[in-house]
Structure formats: C-alpha cells, structure tokens
Image (cartoon, rainbow, N blue to C red; front, side):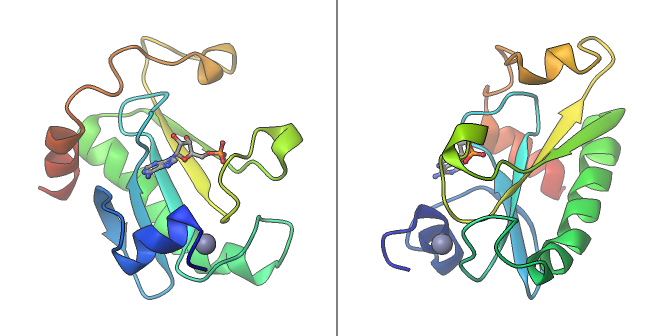
Length: 134
Ligand code: AMP
Ligand code: ZN
C-alpha cells in the first residue's frame, strides 16, 4: 500500500530506527516515545489492525518477545507493556497493525504511569538505537 506510512517503512521508502527484524516482522523505535526504548513491532504485510486477521499475531509474536528481552538486557527495563490499539476510538492513528512494546522502569511504575509520557524518552534516539543493536 503506497499511502501507508508503515508499508513505506517496511519498503525502506521512509527511514526508521530498526532494532530487530525477521522474515515476517520488523521492529523500530517509536518517533514519539512514551517510555525510553518504546518500540513498534509490525508485520511486513499490510493488515489494518489486530482484529482483522488472527494469523498476524503469530507473525509478530517472535519479534515482540525478542524486543521485550532486548529492552530488558540492553536498556535495563524491568518490565514491558505490550499493547495494540485497534480503531480510532481506541487511539489507533496508523492503520497498519502494530504492537507497542513499552519498556517500564522502577522510577515510573504501574498502570497509571503507562500513558504518562516520560519527557526524556525521546532524547537521542540514534544513541538509543545503537545501544539496542550493540
Ligand atoms: P497508534 O496510536 O497506536 O496508531 O500508534 C502509532 C504510533 O506510531 C505512535 O506512537 C507514533 O508516534 C508512531 N509513529 C508514527 N509515524 C512514525 C514513524 N514514521 N516512525 C516511527 N514511529 C511513528
Ligand atoms: Zn501498511
């Protein structure tokens, strides 16, 4: 789909900070992160959201687990929230299925802090990518 921003990222027409990929999925840093290391996992094929096709969950599952372990080992996250918004009323803004992997740290714990953006989370995303790939 030419007009889909995430299809363009998969195709390399738009840049992204990739941190993991396999045959079916890619993972890259969110451009406006809520927490340090906030990563999006997407299938390579275009699927609108996670309610459209159950098979797509299997395609992204290994990448979700890999990224979750990556942010724990490389960034020191102590946990993650794994979240996917389906439908604009639920907060979905990009209509190519994606799963948010939100690293969580002890200084900002709990569900209430999940949706509160860490003001420093977007600092130096290039360095953060290097840390995750290193
Ligand atoms: P959602 O609201 O669940 O659809 O999430 C869309 C996410 O995509 C938001 O967190 C955006 O910050 C993120 N996003 C949009 N465009 C890009 C992009 N070009 N590169 C990285 N993240 C993006
Ligand atoms: Zn797409």
